[in-house]
Length: 383
Image 1 (cartoon, helix red, strand yellow):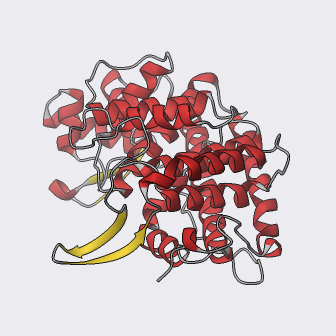
Image 2: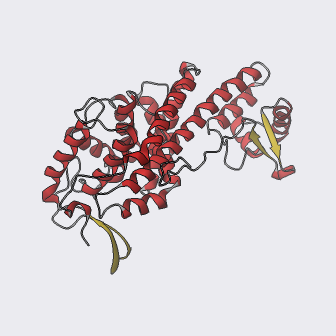
């Protein structure tokens, strides 16, 4: 079987542009809607949104690769690097590294992409990893770079990338293409089209020994940001994680040919779904501000401390709901006081109760906004 990089027309990808036209337009409209909603947030809430989306992207892009990071540690690291107030909790090298990469992307999203930036991102990601030989440079090993699964004695090869000797030339062509197709370049491409091609193109070269998936998704975020002229705060990795199986299946189905309409349609649907997820985060912050304004001066110090802690978890609050035991632990109070405080919070509409006695759980009264799955059909309709 010949891989796409072995095809005579590599890397001249082709696709059906008409199929993506409605999605491209919807993405720009959605970006404008998010920008308008964010304008209603105060400075502290905008900072919180930025940190929340960046930390979620950092954690989820790592989880896609099977690496589980502590969200609070990543969030604290991002806050410190942005010059915001943060708790002193320590971060592992992996947590610190992914946070550094996300902040670098946020601050320099409009700049051209080059080898120095990519290798810098790789050093950040590989911080503390002792089993990776080529850190901060393209891979050099002689053995094939393969994506495999299954048993060691009988592996299934999902993809084989170009040999290491070809990587410098392939990457020079990729970087030239990426910068040439930027909005300010000589051959600009629409936002979703360029971001989708960039991710697939980069993954097919697989230039690094490890970390290609995380860097590839970061490149897509950069492409989207450049198309909008500002950081997107699009929950792209968080959405890909939800669709992880189809992500890998669609990537694999696209690695033997240069006609990539199916991949781009899949990617466009994910990007629009990711916008919905970001919009839901913005609306949650607006509702949070309204809730706190309504309750201002009506809660005691214990109640406010616990409510803020639950709100910190995002729209869904504590997984499974807040328990009386959680309240005792956070407020450092007695069970009897916790019961009275929680009943008062219910009466004031701060939380709602489900269950009885020891099974009682308390949930935010802020409405959840479900994110619908988005696909682009063959006619280009957004479903």
